[in-house]
Image 1 (cartoon, rainbow, N blue to C red):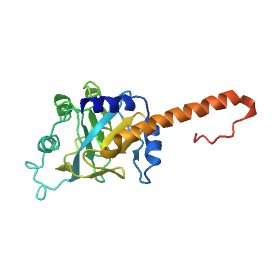
Image 2 (image 1 turned 30 degrees about the vertical axis):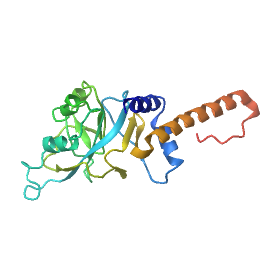
Image 3 (image 1 turned 45 degrees about the vertical axis):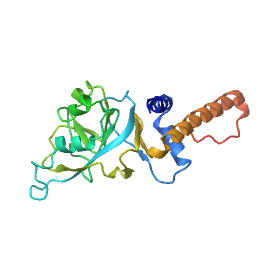
Image 4 (image 1 turned 60 degrees about the vertical axis):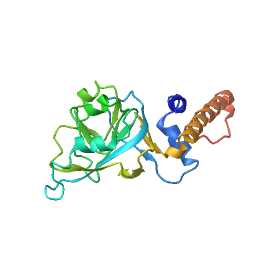
Length: 221
């Protein structure tokens, strides 16, 4: 298992989100990508299997705040271990609400998670940048979001920006966006993404060599 993880990380380090999305597109028709993400750590690659927490609109009667807590659901999300995992937070229609900040998300550093991905906002970018994990979200918030949304359930399939994330699916995110990869296909998709990089490098070299004579291939970009 350790050797497999090292192999996956080696392959992931050689590609970008666009390469992963191209590789996914060669075998899948569904959308797998998220764009327009912001990050306090844009130079860090976020990569690892997902654990999820979904939020719902706050309601004290339906969702008692003493029962539905981030701390409790976080413990449930990582009950099988947190090392190297990516916490995916689904806002479920509240993209401008804060889903967490520096204090709550310090738990990720304590438990060795790779980072956090959300289609909502996060607070305390400067604090988050000091932790060892990567964070990608809709943008920075300055206001607490607990009066608008409440963490509801952990480790169930979630939808972030129209993309389904199942616990165990792999998250790949960098400064250009994010992609979600099915767990069963992670090795094949990363290998294909590396082929995409190689293919595009070959096309670019042919274009350079052809010069003014032109090149009849069909590069995507």
